[in-house]
Image (cartoon, rainbow, N blue to C red; front, side, top):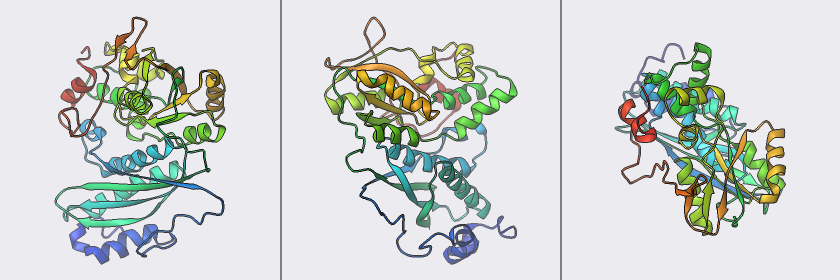
Length: 353
């Protein structure tokens, strides 16, 4: 491999890529080279679930200053596994489709594959197959397939007025890293590097979804892919409900310090997108049990509000309308990259310099 990493993909051609890049990496995978991938032989009754998502240019590329495809590979796996997390599924595997310019080097392609593979390993799954083709621009798509116990699959529906909303995960790392890169805050080197690492390697909340599904404590769930407001709004619309959000959130210490230095309220970072948290709906009487079940697994979660019969979505003691962050495709809020300062302003407003 060391002799070909500086070559371009069009130096190798499709057969060369297969033999010199993919076979050394995936040749031991059952069914490698076949037209279809073997995910798993199911020995117990299961409900199969599948999701397909394409990967945008990772925000971290804008403030790392290097177009490393590793980050895109990691994100491609995470965004698909996060959708499985919202169902409570166990992942069986991913199949990925890569469209890459012919001028892509083998080294760049390897970095992309490293990102996907490393993320899969961290989540206890693997790439089972896929497709590679040439095109004018980078386009990355994957399909994740998982299984749920019959009757235990979490959905967006199933919530009632009075149910509580739990935000699972540690939000704010992505945009804290952006604020640090833009000079709005400073941290000691170790803390800064931890924020950067968490921003570059977001984790899907698979175990949280599985616990809530297996225990029956989760009534509904959805991952936070387009901002917390968009997630809560979608859950409300699906169930014909509204929500009263507290507006209070305790961030992890380094993220909280970045918020403080930037003149932002902790909830300003908690409601952002890019950290792939999970919102789980649980009955009011089950909140303590749900929190204990998650904490036993080492999973961070906080109660953020209650679903209401009133269809409005409000925040705080005064019940003011909540019009939070909502990245929406095919709209003016759809993110397509850009200058870091403009991105921060679009997502967080104007932080204190």
